[in-house]
Image (cartoon, rainbow, N blue to C red; front, side, top):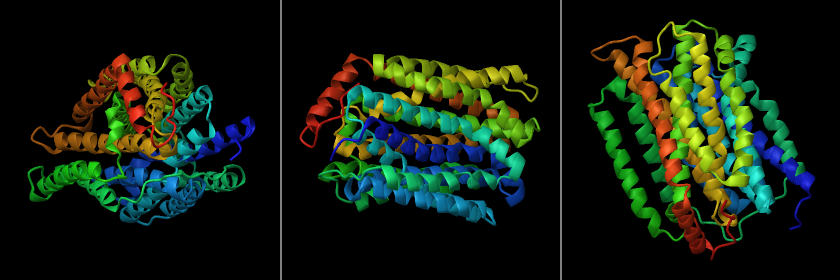
Length: 479
């Protein structure tokens, strides 16, 4: 296949980023609409958690399958199918008559979304073959991740103020249709020469593992943490996880290639992705409810207050990509860990009368950290991996992001709810303190793991992993 011209390569990158923007935007745009959805559809706090987590849970469950499916049946074909499904799901979400239907349509959206992010990354890796150019392209990709997630509350506030909460789903429709057309015109078809075979057992185990864990965490406060249903969920999670870890290494072509995790940078990127995105999801979930339910701000006002977080993410995300191409991921990871920890720490003593200046300062500091963390996650995840399996490697990184978001909303929401309804029966603001401490802990994990997996020893493990995988295809250069 003839390599596309530079202009066409850049156009392909833009098309791939379009898909990422609508999927990422939908991850967080819903947060600012939660109070409006709660009022119109009479939802409980756990119901609001499911509006967010039904989407991220399905995404996390299917991303690896979608990546390997694209490697087998064609990346452009899978990408277009994902865009079509996501667009239809968005339309149905805007028409949802009840909370149950909204959750169901969010799951349909996520089925489409799972065919976009890892497939788009695979397209990018196979389009940009030059090491430096690929690093810059991945930097743009990482920037798009951060920008789309951070802009969600702002865009959501504007749409809710003008057309209502259903408008947050309308914005996906024209973007999705345009991306389908542009993909057909400009994105070449590509497949892996030796794609993995379908691993049905592994896929079922992944779904059961994630679903049982998230369900148990979200429903724990309502049913009681010691209830048979919740204990059964956590027991099922443990059994499914154990079965997954025992079964996958025995398959010749597993859904989750555990050999990837022999690379310390890859394992570190996975842990960092879970922690960073758990922090972001918990941050936005708590902050939205605080600004609208405690402070009484409108959705638009709340969205505009988070604009500094989005602005610094837009500024620092591409800077992170350029820094990685020149000096590697270590400095961005250190900055991310320090800033995410500091921004969340500032809110651990939050009060109902907290000054706006203090809130904005915490948003800026946290936003800088989140802005610089995405590019090193993505770059490290695909470094040293076979280029023909880039869809699978990128899917694991994307899965880690979605697992993090699901856990962030589930854990933070459930812990805060448990404090509110427990013996102390405190108000939301005081109960949220424990949630902010959890988010602070996630920032510390980013810092510690980033330091541990970006040094010389870690790079050596990545090189050894690349050598073991050389038999399949030329690896993506480590960097």
